[in-house]
Image (cartoon, rainbow, N blue to C red):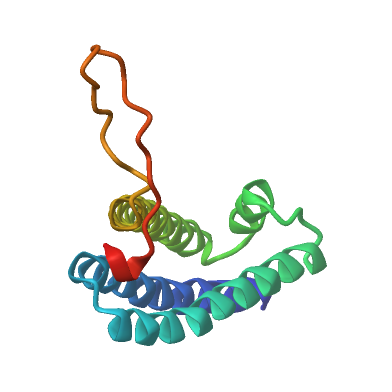
Length: 155
């Protein structure tokens, strides 16, 4: 019976992971267009999906241990070898793993975009504040140390 429940969890997690992947794609678009309101909505949508995935992973691990197997891929393989639905278990496990890898890649891509935007905003703020002035040369050809900080009101 635990094998059937594990299969159900895999199927539910595949659906959840597909939703998460779609949210990550929408997040990339919203980050590119700097739509903060959309980003907040997506965050509110992603958090319950992640909690569900975490809860299901814990339940799968618990079921594997209760069935006398380790809570890892080897334990799943052992359960599948003893189960009439073993091929389905392994197939759904592989599909879920693939989807999770796609989510991780999308999340890394979004993180790179966030970091790029942070650098851009930081650079812009430094220019406005006057703390990121280009190196200029004085009449003797030496680098000028004429760095003056300006308040925003004087930028």
